[in-house]
Length: 125
Image 1 (cartoon, rainbow, N blue to C red):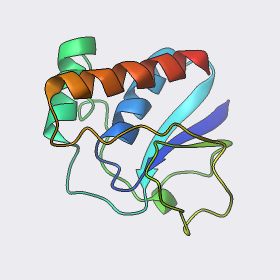
Image 2 (image 1 turned 120 degrees about the vertical axis):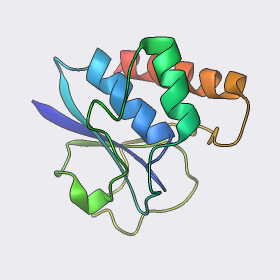
Image 3 (image 1 turned 180 degrees about the vertical axis):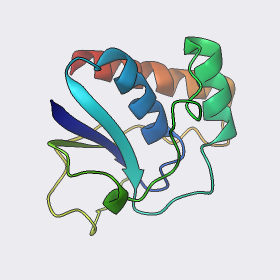
Image 4 (image 1 turned 90 degrees about the vertical axis):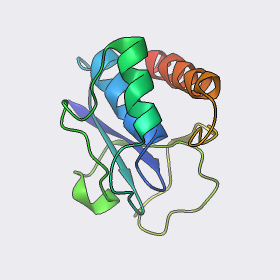
């Protein structure tokens, strides 16, 4: 099975939500991971709450936590969440850049819009 990684700077919000949705919608196609070039102490509280609200998904209970890029296996596909930074840690370029805004600190509505866009893109993979 191919491996796909969703990458953003802190691996605390967008990439974590993408990993969780990937595990739901892509489980027969890909092993899904997320990582960052730096990490926060934990997954964004709003991301945890809204993913539970919308999908009944508890990302922490699924074993998700912020990870550095070198803490995940080498992946076949790398997707940037749209951090607008180059990633000197990666040995190759991204396969796609989704250009998503970071909803951290924004309204629940903004979070939901970003989550729905992640869901749409994952279903298209």
